[in-house]
Image (cartoon, rainbow, N blue to C red; front, side, top):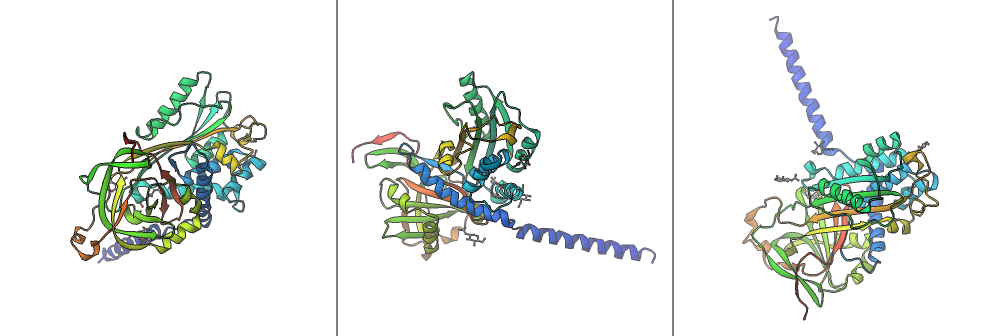
Length: 415
Ligand SMILES: *[C@@H]1O[C@H](CO)[C@@H](O)[C@H](O)[C@H]1NC(C)=O
Ligand SMILES: *[C@@H]1O[C@H](CO)[C@@H](O)[C@H](O)[C@H]1NC(C)=O
Ligand SMILES: *[C@@H]1O[C@H](CO)[C@@H](O)[C@H](O)[C@H]1NC(C)=O
Ligand SMILES: *[C@@H]1O[C@H](CO)[C@@H](O)[C@H](O)[C@H]1NC(C)=O
């Protein structure tokens, strides 16, 4: 009898624990982004299109691949290190003038942490970020601490007197950060007298429905009408969201990544042609329109099984989008980095390897032989296309780019 109350008590405690566990689970399920993180997700998606168009103007550019949320965090870093208009321009480029300074940093940090969570999202996304300064620089403790906390930045001094070994050490760090997937960020560094942002990344989508690893063969990819390279091509038929815009002569296909938390949206012209025509059409609004018109249907997808390695120096492009002071030696005030007005942003290397592979989650095989997969639309990606990896939860854009020239041996040039 004496023990009875204590048993009841312990049961009550057990219930309480169970209840609070449930509550914790529920909050984990519903965990929404803070309002400023959502806003930054939105503005970084707009930045994606502005930056893409700026980069596509460059006639020498072929493949494009960058992560707008990571570029946004680089702008956050410039803001953190900058003062007065050098700092405020970083906000303006991100259309985040109205966001308070501390919310800018916590919001960008929250967004990046959410979208790069490999466990929750079942994608491989390694992101290495480093700020290099000339050997004369002294990084301020406060800056080192907060840039590490918000943006996961490492800091390093580099001596360009021996340029070759300086470049080599950058590339070695990038390779190490990406498990060897990105062996090279740059062959050379032209301006060696400033601070340098380097992002080295490896992204590998894990499909919501995998391709069969044996359904891969070598096919031609038409870089242009007169230039074909040989690439491994993977094939599968499944139910996908798909839209054919017959007026604009293009297809839009959405391929969900694992857990449907994000998807790779591919915009491809009917036939091989320079992508300029599509790029003129490509706005955020137009993409939303295409997405809204997509319908689920059977699609026979053929996609190059390739790894794209693309490195951009965004310094000039960010300057053209309005980050004019940070990149200008005479005007930059990045004195929160070192306590002195001795730095400007000389390079912004943004480099990624993206591996398109067959891997993904198993799927319901019962669908084969059913009515649903009859008469699939063909989506044969053997010529240049544009893609957007769009996040379903935050509406941010994880990657945007174009595949124009995959790695591969030249096949033939008649046609
Ligand atoms: C830059 O440093 C000043 C103090 O010198 C500080 O008041 C300000 O908040 C810092 N700016 C940022 C964006 O951290
Ligand atoms: C990533 O997601 C998992 C599972 O949803 C969660 O438990 C973990 O806390 C998340 N990690 C971070 C760094 O947010
Ligand atoms: C994704 O999920 C699959 C199957 O559950 C697992 O084998 C794989 O390691 C996961 N990948 C990542 C990056 O979490
Ligand atoms: C986005 O998530 C919702 C809810 O989980 C899901 O029904 C939908 O299919 C997803 N959308 C995409 C494009 O993956």
